[in-house]
Image (cartoon, rainbow, N blue to C red; front, side, top):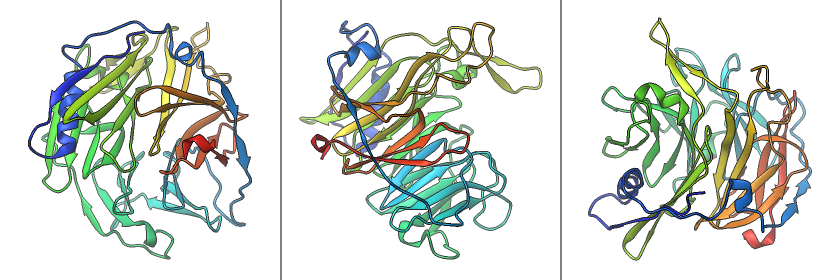
Length: 367
């Protein structure tokens, strides 16, 4: 394993998070590497596994049922669920205080509706706001208004990205949206100034963007960001210390996915029998990073997608220095996780035909 890769830069003038992103891109050029472990699982070989205590929770009677629960988030006693390809709404909101479940993010062409399928949400802990979007339009809501009968957005906006577009997972921190784009590996967009910054090309060119997507998570109150790559085993952490930026990445392998240009101009991922599912869900508390990591082959010997044994029942917990803290056993396979900022509760979606929200109490050393 190549760990850690470290680069230090002097603190620059300007917006703090932009400085972080600039440093993040530095890791792509010149860095020193050292060997420490053979795999991500081996990195946790000396760490004990903890069986988490599940906390009973039931949604209110008459609540809409869940279809996918692919992505989870938490803000102020509300769990946000990204359902992706449902008929009329992209999201569901769960009020942990009452058990109420609400469809949210209506799709359509009317006022405040999401035009495209899919979508994403961003949590702003400082302002207690939820941002939802579809890649074209974004709407900001006060969390206090979410369960009103007809909540209205505080504002709406579009990303002015000069012909480029964010793709896949993204996070919000210190007034910036951070993620990957179709043309660049990393990008940041400052909401207040509409400043869009990009850096780093995809290995193999921009047509390979689908093969190199990361899942990001942000520290709730500080300018710290972590990421994990889905297609190959790599995660990284960015921090500031003593007026310098310290960038670390941990890498154990290469990407087996290739993306081909089709005759109609679209792109399609073409996997091999060696293709793996690595990091595919992440969340951050004030003291820890949490990853769902599989490391399993996506395809069977006949090339078909595996239907069982792919999703894990363990969550890997690290501190914000990248040190392993615990392996958390949830007792059943899950497909997405989230934690509250104080690290008291972990939320997960079950990997069942009719998924449900699972809630676990985190160990006291996380508090």
